[in-house]
Image (cartoon, rainbow, N blue to C red; front, side, top):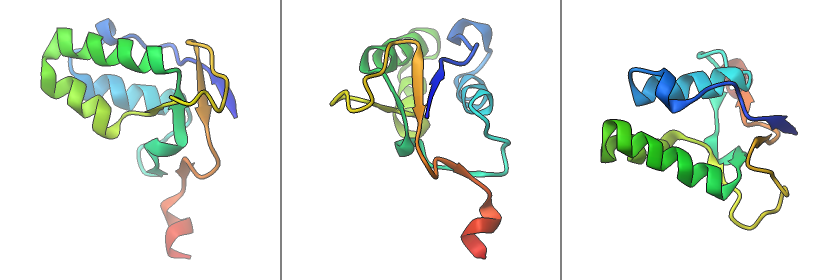
Length: 101
């Protein structure tokens, strides 16, 4: 399902991980659910813009963190996303109890 970009900006946070956590929380993640960043897609330009902002503010390790645990770029434009949209696919955020049961 497509959603509007969460109301979060890199410059509002004191650490890259805080930005990433808040980004996912704004999409509905509650910190105890399983999350699959590969099922969350954003516009490739937005993905690059965020990586650049993180690198500028906190260095390469912050940009690499975005690459490793941030959402995926919709490189092939499958979801026809605008820069201010996020696609949250089925199973992207789910209760851990579902994994056990």
